[in-house]
Image 1 (tube, one colour):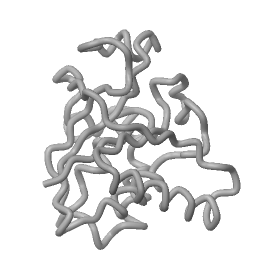
Image 2 (tube, rainbow, N blue to C red; image 1 turned 90 degrees about the vertical axis):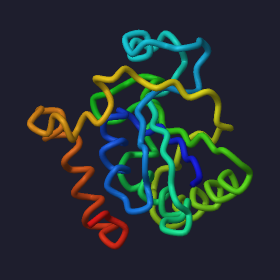
Image 3 (cartoon, one colour; image 1 turned 90 degrees about the horizontal axis):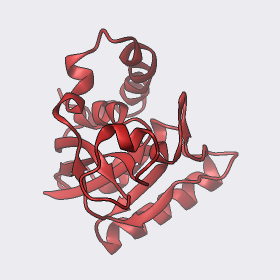
Length: 175
């Protein structure tokens, strides 16, 4: 199993998307890329720590490639929007890939270059950074969508991302 770490807005959204992919296990919501140890949610969302809301996951590269994970990442948020995803505004909601090795970095560079030339009119602003310490968010933030699908945020923000996932990445979804 390999590890991947992504930040693309609210971690509830990102977690829900990646949990549905075949070959992906142990998707955890948390914080990374900041300047203090063990940041609490309330401090992160107020923009006081420099952390991004992020997920960390394990994946089997024999089942799903890092390249596909990146395409899912880019398709389920706006990577051309700096420090903002929908109503969530601030550095803590930035688009960032935290790579765990040079292969992941090179793959991300290639995918960004390709998407910039073929898909997006505006330049992708997603940061590429070496993975740093990942801090698991509090228990109430784990598996959020699956436990609270009737929540308005889930209905209005997460459900459309899952529809994009189902329409563009159907062959990669868990049965």
